[in-house]
Amino acid sequence: MKDVVSRSANHGKFRDPQVTADGQPRASVSLRSPQTLWFNTGTLCNIECANCYILSSPTNDALVYISAAEVNGFLDQIQDRAWPVREIGFTGGEPFMNPEIIEMARLALSRGHEVLILTNAMQPMMRKTMRRGLLQLLNTYGDRLTLRVSVDHFSAELHDRERGRGSFERTLYGMGWLRDNGFRMAVAGRSVWGDNEADSRAGYAALFAKHGFDIDAQDPGRTVLFPEMDETAEVPEITTACWGILNKRPQDVMCASSRMVVKRKGADRPTVLACTLLPYSAEFELGETLADAERDVHLNHPHCAKFCVLGGASCST
Image (cartoon, rainbow, N blue to C red):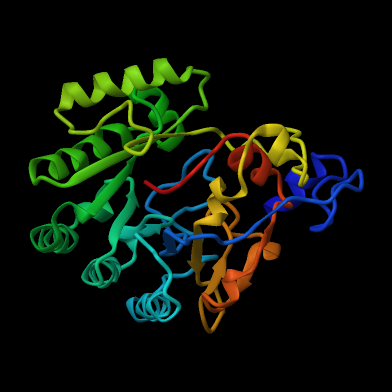
């Protein structure tokens, strides 16, 4: 649904997966060394943000809850295919809306993977059952579990403009519980309001110091700053020649090292996507197994150019 907007804004670009609009061979990326497998736990969320790239909300169930049994099946496939996966990531929606999130995280941790859960640290995470489950995971697996909390801006005013009045304080309350219990935390922010990176990191550093959060604001893996996903912006297509021109390597692009599993509403089984940023693009749906997902990915979307090649974005830690 969002592809129609983005591609029409780019004047005939991103139509053919093999060639660009001016007839040059389009760049592609091979799965070199899969390090992160993401699971989208479902698009339902307790809030509705103003600029959510995946359109999560209390009513959007386009991606339904994935189950622990389904996750376990993909963990088996990782082992069977000898993928060198270091990290299992859980995203949404709000992962703590999914009643099986604790068991899914436990399954991944029990196999030796690191686990990253993306959350707004609000009411779903703070339910008694979730807090009890998180404490059990912490006691068993320690700092192999990281919770990355969405703090869109270091000021309450701008964060709440994105996520709703009072959300900043509710998120900080959840982060305080994580801090007091010794969880490893990271933060995801946005650079949507025009702050330069230095100012943004300084602002987050002050926020972390004020609240005693053990998060390094200067570490891009612990304080991740995502650019706004403006699908009306025109971006260049990436050709095979661009790698040398830009001094970039295909293996440095996110789809060289990660995949995401989703379950679509009405589907019998989950499917594997090339990218966490393109949950609704059929072209980037690779198949129902990790074996299917080992094929090359053609960079046939504006996000491929803007965020991954030109912006160097990565969702992993």
